[in-house]
Length: 288
Image 1 (tube, one colour):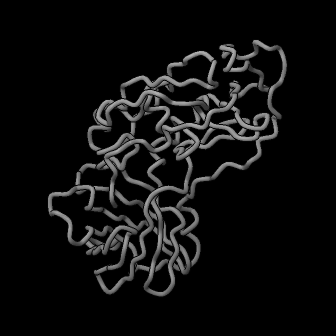
Image 2 (image 1 turned 60 degrees about the horizontal axis):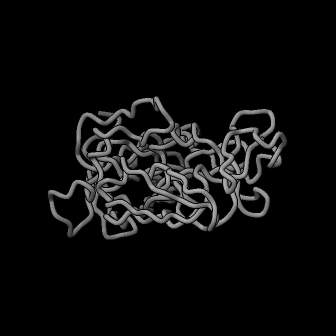
């Protein structure tokens, strides 16, 4: 997987009017950010339909693979790497753990790096803080990840004969964080939603300070200047959000990350991951 060191993703926001929704209320009310009224309920009336559409993504479960006849040739832990990369490049090294595989599906996790034990993500204590904590963020090249040692759930794991395909979603790390974010409606009377106010971003910190720096945005040309954590902009903005929202809530999106396409031959699995040829070797099976 190729990781960009430039974190401009999603930081150039479209200029438009935005309103804030209080997640979890019976009906959402709020003020126009362009006027500086950002406190929920200041205009005394509903601003967006409580209809939760568009539908939000749902995350897979290992229950998808436990029914039917298990396929032992897929099960177990596999060590892998992107061929042609440096042997010391942890972001090109993988631990693939297949925990269940039936006639059509495979389930498990993929971890970047050969770090052991695996990293357990702590609970989110403050939705206004950048997540995950700095000790985990230090194990990544970007604020979005991947984070070394964190098991990522296999998304849409499929199998046919000896072939298996799956994705990983780097946004999985932010599932709890996204669910705690405030919803902002924008465009066409709140027909789209995100977890930061939409506007023109006119300050850009260095990539290595993105997690802790503040960015300034202006929703309209003559509107007030607002300060928003740059890390939140990187995860929430409309161009490449890791959090996606409807009128009711925000969740971590599922459709990001690389795709893997592997073919099993004994204790070897070879194929591609979207950025290069990959090779896996099975370390142990679940029968051991």
